[in-house]
Length: 106
Image (cartoon, rainbow, N blue to C red; front, top):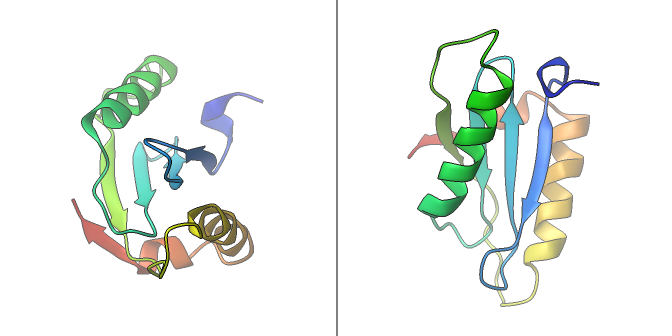
């Protein structure tokens, strides 16, 4: 399966001992960012994901990736981020429209 064939690509990512979730919609060139601590994505992550999308879409799209911050529940303590990321994945798989209804702008 090619990346462009998938509806969503889930990327759990752990920058500096904190789990976040990047959800890519390759056909639309949209990147959704979910962070249970409500931080914005770091520039390194954005650069890597943008480059990967540009390479994979080189033949099919000239558009730049669009990043969207997704409103999600906030973790109360310092250790629940992994649980929240797994919960986000499950909710998006079972209720795909949920991600579009909670979009904030970066």
